[in-house]
Length: 68
Image (tube, rainbow, N blue to C red; front, side, top):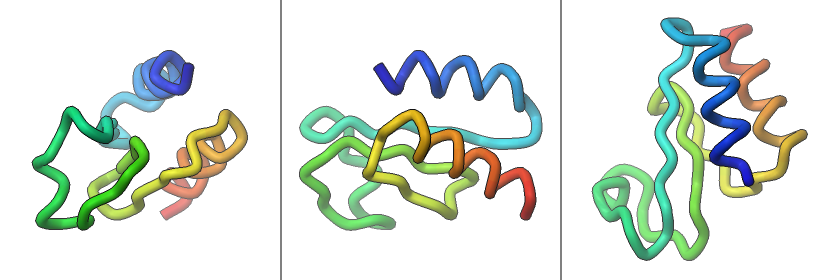
């Protein structure tokens, strides 16, 4: 669900924001920087990690990243 939203927003803000989705149990390269998590997370610009992956939370995170 959130993957589609992230792809749409990623294309819309291409070149302005770098986005990476880490899936719990599948991706492990985030552990040294963010620690172990039990839920999937979205990382924006390698600075902000979001674990509450709802449409409003993802949109708010993108908006915040654009303002910085």
